[in-house]
Image 1 (cartoon, helix red, strand yellow):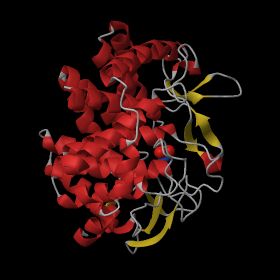
Image 2 (cartoon, protein in one colour; image 1 turned 90 degrees about the vertical axis):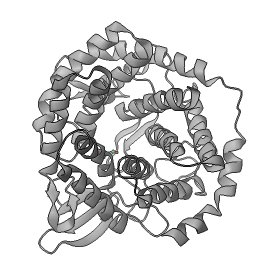
Image 3 (cartoon, helix red, strand yellow; image 1 turned 30 degrees about the vertical axis):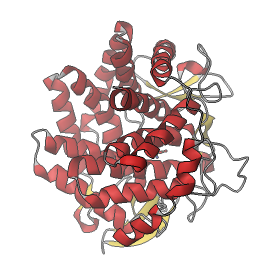
Length: 398
Ligand code: GLY
């Protein structure tokens, strides 16, 4: 692993030149303040477009209406989670009122065991709520959600099963699952049982062993045979094909391993994150502005759609990785994140105020092969964009 890491370091040159070429005149403090103020206006509009018992999902481009989901949808936690970031940076009491209202309908899902998305659904909103208000009830919600998530742990494969058995998959484990490990690690670190941490570590280690190709690109889905514990195949459900590099999957993995290092301080996770980002940033199909195509192997590049949500996740992860690295390397991650934030904040990706159903960003790609949520706003695109600016403000500007 070490040798491979240093070989990859040799390719930093091209990446750093590209990053440093950006326009540095933007005042990030001013930009971030304006983005949060805009988000407050937008999310009050979004609130009006969503029934009280539901959560926003996306904008239907044909009808111009906001599509909604119930609270079991994997994205259900992003609306309250985003509202809390907006409140934190604007102190807007109406935003706080809406956040509390939406947290109240999400809380019951702490018992949900139907998939692996409890981290997204419960830790993003209630983790933010507990960080801000230290309400013990929110901690109980988080602890209960962690218990629900580990019901899906399968010791035979040392992994958490993502989705239930469904054709063509027997026991699917998807790269997105790296994100949900934060819930488990946080609970162990905050008075919970050590078993949550052990499960997260086992899952992350299985992911390194089986999910990544030698070039540090990841499959979206691994299919396991639970009766033998053997890996059946690596697939790309939401990507272009089974050999391709699906952009958001890479972003989930990158963010996930950086987060693993925060809690576990195992150099393997740090180097995994570094190697993933080097692979992506030096990929011949990474656009100059660092907003990835939805799949790095999409056949119609350079005309392929970009995925703003993958860019948001990368920006937030890059800022965290910059804290665990030094000197030129650390600076390069900050500059890459800054470049992404500035681009997403521009008219190209940020909707005009009062438009887009109330979502902040446009141009996310959900599941292109299924023709679902293509070139639309996505709740998680907004969430990680807000998180990236939260991190930039707290870690880089302060
Ligand atoms: N399956 C979660 C995602 O679309 O990233």
